Image 1 (cartoon, helix red, strand yellow):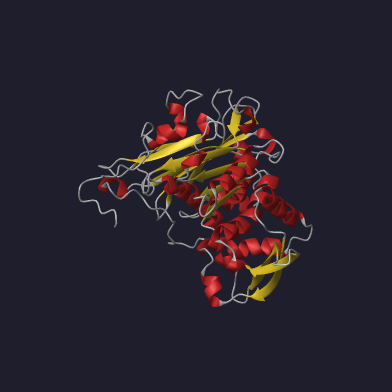
Image 2: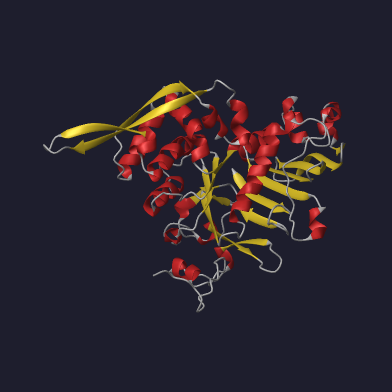
Length: 420
């Protein structure tokens, strides 16, 4: 479970911003909470903000952490890390970036992992955990390839010489079967799924449908379509060899899983329609003939089922892309539901859809905003909970009226061209 994430000096983020999934003491919408021993945590959170305010960069920072950790063991000497500092201040261009993630993992034990690095090397790295509610050090990396750990972790001394200045000890130690680092490493590399756009993930989703031997994905998907009034009654899928064009559409971080000669898929979607004689007929449409919203929902379903079943974290940039607001609300309710989300799965996404800004759907601590300082070009991140919002307040109206910031100010001068 994700508890908190912070980042500093990355893309449009200059000063440290903190995103938290720790619930406030608010008693509203208690079904939206994952109950912990001492604290409660949020099942879902949404980020709003004007275009170019940095809301996608918050998610990109999380994705950068996941990507770097997954690929750390493949790093060669002098290879660059995908770290991009804040560039609107010359002092920050030469400074390293920092990332920190707090997690609740196996046996409800809290872990904190952090790093400070630039594209060339890692300056600091640390991992703590709280086995008895008290912070205990697993390791600290204070300078390049200089490490500190307690006597209980002395076997790390056999692993650290195998590490490099551009490789993370968390990944290296786990690869060498060091058990204390494994929970945090597994969460960062496998516990969080970050999606940027649906189209690049199409073949990954098709593979899940094709390999759905138990029929659980089909059952889940058809139930989604039935409950959301989408006229899809079935589908068929066949394996075909992928073309070069299809391979080029796969995101760089996934291409290693799709070598030349990899299989692609042909998908047909079944609809029941009434013909001119009043008889019901099944019509099969090619996947590409479907609306973009239907395509996106079809692609998203395997990820929803996987995360809900395994109790993991799903992070989506522009969840609402080509999806009706009612469908997005349905997805949010899947995560907030006690019936459908029994394993502590979490959903984090950004959107421009203000129809979702309702205190009937979200708690105040689940709604976040990004705002960019026009003079400095830096992103700020803050929750609705920072404002004195009444439980009966129309949050959508307040947001559109600029009460919470995070909206664009558009000049409506005499020279505005509005068409004829």
